[in-house]
Amino acid sequence: MKQLNIALAAAVAALTFGMASQASAADVQIYGRIDAGLVYEHTDPGVGDATDKFTLDSGVGTASRFGLRGSEDLGNGYQVKFVLENGYKSDTGALSTADTLFDREATLQLVGPFGTISAGRSAILGTDGGSFNLLGGINPFGTGMGNIGNQGIVLAKIDSSRRDNMLTYRSPNLAGFQVTAAYSMGSNDYENKAGSDRYMGIGATYTVGALSTVLLYEGMNEGTIEDLEEGTKHKAKNPEDMWRVTLGGNYNFGFMTVYAAAHCFGNANALSTQGWNGSAMEAKLFGGAEKNFDELEGYSGIVGFDAPLAGGKVLASVGALKAETDELDEKVKATAWFAGLGYQYNLSKSTRLYTGIGYTEGEYKYKGEKVKPESLSTVAGLSYYF
Image (cartoon, rainbow, N blue to C red):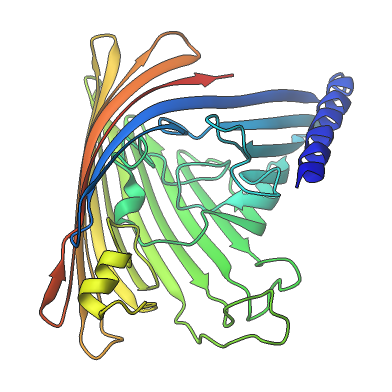
């Protein structure tokens, strides 16, 4: 592991200096963010004792990252671009993903009159990060200040928001209308094979004046094996392919911007709600047995706003979810909601202070039993953009 980290550091240095030497031929930039926040969280799992923790965390206000991006004009309206971006933890200095340098994005892009074609590791369309995200404008918090206001809490979970071997196409902007489509071939050695999870998404955005909207469909052609590393010992899961649809947007009134989103899904195998499929849920509802789900269906919604206040910006949002599955002998029912309130203040063009408070709650029912986990969080921190 130590040798790997040294090799990765050497690769970054060589790549950085090599690109700098070619700056006359291409525009290459080093960029990133570093974030550190204090987090207090009180959690009641619904079974057993509540816990309190106070921690220093990385990526509370925004994910800490380091990247290289560049472009070269090929003439006649064509460009080639690249993005190489890794996540790291400012509290420890560790990579966000072990043994992976550019875990957030590694794409090569061709831009022309036809639009943009991208190939490589990339974020899915249904997130607020990456070069081609479509859900950065449905909630003032995006993926949250920590867990505060995190839209992922009430969106059906797609395991890993970044996928390998992704092909993405984004159309030109035609009078405010734009289409983006993406397809991930799955993991190496199993590309386009039944054993590997393959993501697909297609969405349309429309922006006119103060209004910005998005409609997005996403699906997962789920792998039929549990462990791709066990050679011939693959075990069939026979999963139902997941899908989810999100409609949302925002409107800027000048004195505030209002956000809203509606979301529905089917055949999901997980939720990101408070305490879902955790030990308390397993203990009380299923007698301690671990349950894996594959046919969750439901819907959710988010509303929120941000507005200028005292030289900074106040943010607020609430979201709620209702879901169920009947793949067991009786239905498992889930409801959850969150509420978040935050404030951001820019000390400069590059430096931002933030603080927030949020509450999340889940409720899960099965055969007359019920478990109701909940948590209260407060955060305060500093982000620096470079």
